[in-house]
Length: 530
Image 1 (tube, one colour):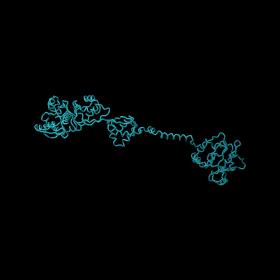
Image 2 (cartoon, one colour; image 1 turned 180 degrees about the vertical axis):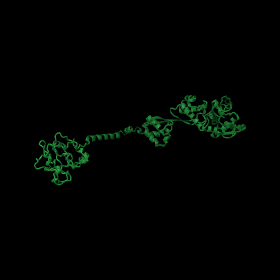
Image 3 (cartoon, helix red, strand yellow; image 1 turned 90 degrees about the vertical axis):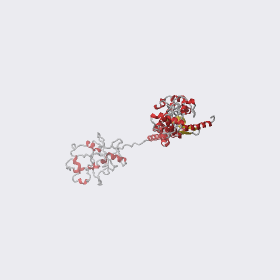
Image 4 (tube, one colour; image 1 turned 135 degrees about the vertical axis):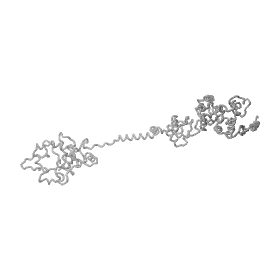
């Protein structure tokens, strides 16, 4: 029996002189077989036998260990397999101690380790412990002689690996590259730690010093300039543009860096939905919020507002637009002579008079003459559509409305003037309106001469009965409404007796009307130079 050894691992030898892990099969292959040593089995009584678990060595003394036959007295003793052979190195001490009973009665495989077995030439140094699935404790553990614990077979290699990593004590003499040896644990070296810190530092520095560039790279739509910008950039907002359309225009003109900040600011500002079409004076490289603020500022719009009054003729309107908006008069006259270019509807019969709707128009830089006049025509058509005037009646309605607009001194008199027209037309009477005579002669004023009234123009209602061929001015919506709904009455005559106050007298008979005309002539005499 050998001295106690460190805790054992099954299938491994603990001898410091020889390599571990020599299977018993390698030893048995080199030992004499029963054929060469026929009397080997008879010597069991002289050698301590292996005691199965749960039995004591004393139980086998009467019959021999493990039931071995008792040798006759005269039979020569054959060498026991455990005895060293002449050609083999001596058996290490304690190799067979596991096969003998414990003197202290302790259970087998408790603490006593096995000695290492010398290496056999030609034997394969491989661990065959895991190739057997049975419990070797029941037979004494003859498959491998080593220094492993009895319960390793159940745990397998994973259990043994866990025991080694858990520091169970007792070292192993296996070479590091062996099957049962501990693999050295890979640890991170100082170089990799330094490199990781350098990468982290570079990332932090990039975010700190190039934050804007990094944000623009990850999300270009969120890039924004800072401040109010500089210089002047004219930007046109077209009719029907959405906030996204406006943002794209601003990005294209380098007013803002990206659409995102502008759209975000507009979503927080309810007034942003009211941005008017037009040309705006903005600045280069503004923040999205600053650009939105300028678009909402009326002073930022680069626009000329031209107000066309009711009752102006086409000639007077063209002159006004040229003067106010700076568009050459020749260009305006050329556009007026091209009905197709300005979108004049077919029922106008090629006549522009009456179709330049009185209103206030925004003339922006770059607007053309045809574009401005076309906008006025569109407004007239829209007004007639809104009043549900049939297309076949529109020229007539505009002609009557133009006369009402020119003759009435106040909006309150328009519907009564319209009734006078209807009554005289119904009776077949000539209209005899000075405004039509002045239009035929290219004049203006409140009086006419006998020569003016003798002009054979179709617009001269002293010479011709009925309506003139077209409008004599551009009427407004009130005059159109008056024609569509004239006041009920039987008046045939009217005259403005006081142009200063706009007082108008209506009459049913010619005699009554002549009295009213005398009042007007008195006013004329009271005027300077009258």
